[in-house]
Length: 454
Image 1: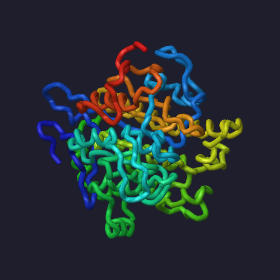
Image 2: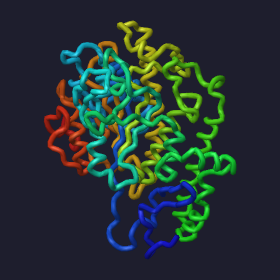
Image 3: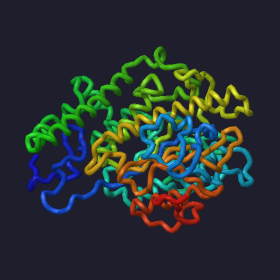
Image 4: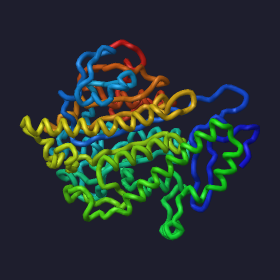
């Protein structure tokens, strides 16, 4: 592998049998002459199900003078990198004459601002989600237009919520009115897609690799060695660190695949047991692994757009590690019982602690003239606020970014009640260079994102 005029293409891949390993940003990717190109802006959506205890979420005070709430406390080291938005709504998640089914509508409307057709059959209908609007416009610049990830399995057919198709509860991303994009929940499949030839490895190739007891990195050893000889000292160090991190992710997947799922998996409700063999035993290990795959996808510019569902909407996962053996969805119908509310707040805090690890990693990862977080907008939240009352207004919305963010961070901004959530998404598309007149029920770009007023 030879660097032309000491300039390495950003699209360089290390290749081997069934492997096409993308690289992180290296100094050698900067042209010897001319202005340095800023890293592209990425976007990520991390979704939590069943709403949030809002009194434990909403900060006291507004503007830059706000006090972190208990649920947001894990992010205290990133206070200046956070933007908390209150007052936003997805009114098309409401019944609007369709009766029960708020959980299905919450997930379906979250990124679309569209009222889904109530059906459990094949005649589903929803809007195009904001991530897919962006993917269609800019996805061609990366290996994958977008990635859809999840931490809980669920079907795409049948009735999952009061006559609504499971496709609504189990998908955030919609590339067309009848085309949900179900999240990939198998870490091995994500790993092979990112670090293989773009598709999960076929079974014959996987068995050959297993028989040879080889790591994926063994297949690109020659290409990596040739590249390493062409790089400067700093880039060699970056390359070595990156390859080590890829091997560590691969090792963790291998450990999960060797575990006895029947005897070692934590006790969960039956609906959550439909998981592939590569899923780690604990939810904490699982989320860490999938978040690491997210970071790797951004680092290698494999995609600029990722959605991740920490649970399907209406999830009945249990959280024994934080003392909550009851099913999450069941607890969300707390009927104002103090003990149930306290346990829900514990789940909300736990989710935020896990998300904070992702933020930590992105804030520490070098990316061009800053960090990965500097060049990313991460949106964290839920399609419900009060899960007991099934409220679709005053949603919990958190944006994380860094010093290079197009938005002014370090604030809590409170908007008028019923402000469309899609106004935020319209602004998000704009800063990504995607010009859209409208999205779902949007009424215009969301104000106060780039200045200190409000």
